[in-house]
Length: 428
Image (cartoon, rainbow, N blue to C red; front, top):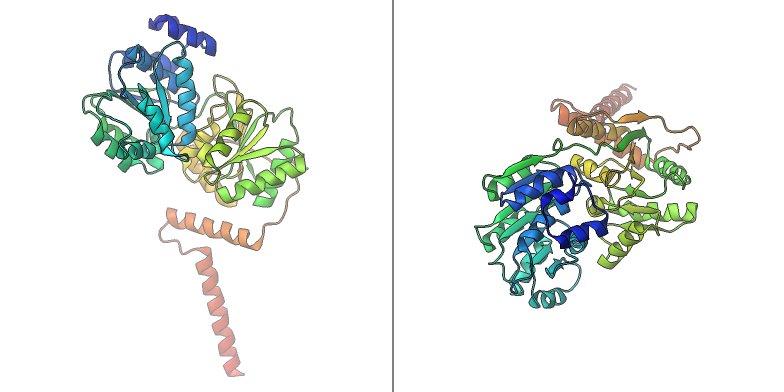
């Protein structure tokens, strides 16, 4: 469907032309008319399918122009990066209107944001914590909010925002339009939707944990962390193929180490994003990556939904996420805006278990590939080898409560051997 079929006004067509948008995505095609009609909506669609424009265009159209001083629509998202991403798209869509959009997030002082609100606001895009903080400081008045959007609802559930969301629902009018957007629709999101939506229309563009069709997925078995780093270095040496790469690491403590190693061996700047990085540092890294000034960005899962870059050639999962839905969001950073992309995962012996669980979630097998022979394989440290074996033990116990474990059996053998030696010593 062409955007011209939505009967929007000229200022929005001009904004869409500036953005280069001509044809609506499937979620936009289904959601825009329903939201314009006033329905409560549940939209389930993969990352990179245009969910922000799907709710923001009709929201702006219904507002029409700036009015009064108090917020009329509230968009809640889980992270600072997503606040800025949604605000950027919203400002672009509202470019030819006088509608006032304000972004609220932590990591900076609240007073400057309170001053902006005081000048008048129509739409607030916020993290739940900062919205509540400004309300408690009496910096905003929520009683005129007539539209509530929960964007990335699954991530908000993962991050434990349920109590803050309930607090916000107590503050805003009961009579309002509700819109819930999510890449997946698990049990917790379903319970949330039942709690605050009334007779919603559910638009499920794909299965609730599907992966983008244009992303080629593959997994390599790489025995340990040192070999993973070596393999990553070899892949990144092909700068022509791996021209814009996002590397995901499960533990933030390892992010910096990997980035330093790549910078040193490949002689290029590599930036990082994780929860210990300051707000400005994270924003600068994302902007440099988005503008093409940076080829490689190494991130923890804080960035799995906070980066909207249309030309990421590769996502590399340095390790396999333990929250399986995070896999969907990680690889959704490539193959965006109908472009092709590649997602590569490194898997050690213990991570086979998690890959199988991910395959069950997404409903498809991930192609297994052999690690190239030119990649040097290093032995695991004693600590890492022990940790891998202990994790495999935990997995087996999870699947079979009666399983005693290899370490239990080893302990038993050692105990029996020591007892035998003791008896032999007494006889002698």
